Amino acid sequence: MLTSATAALKPANVEKKWIVIDAQDAVVGRLASFIAMRLRGKHKPDYTPHVDSGDYVIVINADKVHYTGKKLTDKIFYWHTGHPGGVKQRTMGQILGGKYPERVLTKAVERMLPKESPLARAQMTHLRIYAGSEHPHEAQSPEVIDFKALSRKNVRSV
Figure 1 (cartoon, rainbow, N blue to C red):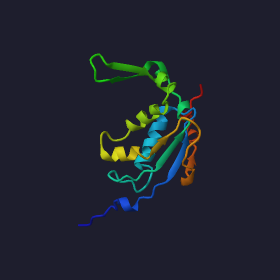
Figure 2: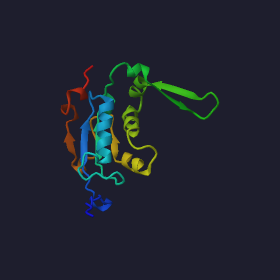
Figure 3: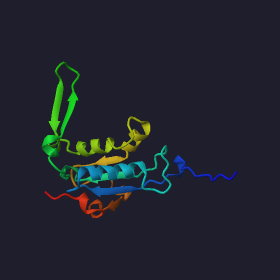
Figure 4: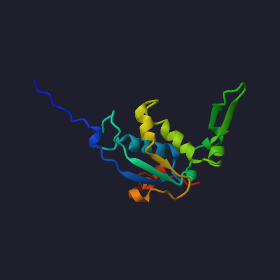
């Protein structure tokens, strides 16, 4: 009987790159799915699900992302403080206008990775999100990816 052996990627053979994505005017859902695919390594031909083969992703201008529809006012995030009656809520617009606007994109990417696994937690550590246009990773000489040019649906003007 003939069997073809598929070569599985070993963690020692992984080559990681650094990429930079400018998130200005990008649609959050499309950007988050692109980032999640890059973090997992699904864009590579030697993708192996149980190996962390993704790239390091740097996102700049995370405070200038856009949403389609009325998500800025209608999408509400809830959390509980742990005290009686401690349910808190905040809209997407309040988070983007607040102190840490990059958390919106972080949560979107986190929810597109496998749930509660050590591999997903390790892959999330390879994501760096900055609200401004500057980042401290020039020494890694990251490759710039023009996310907006990949599809006209990736960009939403006001």
